[in-house]
Image 1 (tube, one colour):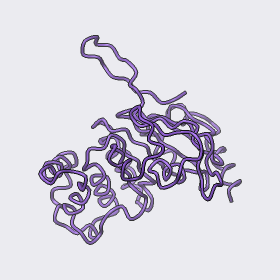
Image 2 (cartoon, one colour):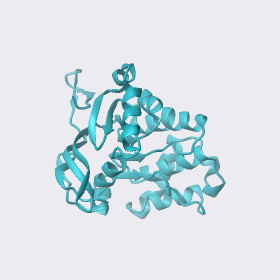
Image 3 (cartoon, one colour):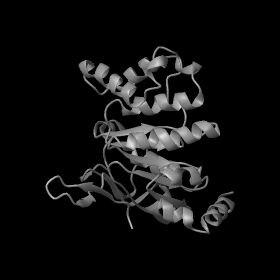
Image 4 (tube, one colour):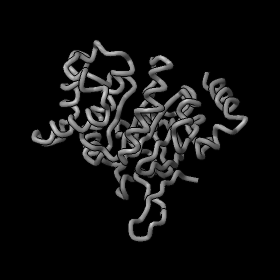
Length: 259
């Protein structure tokens, strides 16, 4: 059953389902004509965090690369806000409101925090960049004191915050985040997953998160998909997935298969 969101109608005062922001339908993709993922169905609603989990080799990176159009769609389609964007380029996808935070090389280390945010505003009119930086500083109050520091001098958690804020500069409707806690300390991991991402979701952006720290990610995400051998093996509300007794066994079996 796909993830859903609710919104309240001002006139009716009742909750109603929100239309999906992103719908991935029967997606098959891979490399050199060889499928790595097959028949993927996935949805992300506005203001919701959806986590894709799986062992190494499950197809998580292939899914994200296809979504941001670094890989072609072999079968199926990608629908964003009701529009089929399966054949668009990476730049066109970005202009449609999709921002991508890669696992590595997600910041310009020699530039200052402010300069990183300015780089993130490349799609904006120059007159709007300053206002968006102010909005990022308001959203993340710990950022203004470090505005003029080179990013290379920041901690791992602070650098990840800069990467997230930089991706948010053009006000994307969908934020795609790849392994944001890789290499972070437990404290920084808790801050990124338990604070930064929920704060971003509260702005109304949909978040598609790929993360290997399943328990931590599912504790903050609304809906989860577990990939095994390139297909969705398990999906559901994250609270229900965490309550399953066999979740760890599924990951262990998948890891053994891919080793």
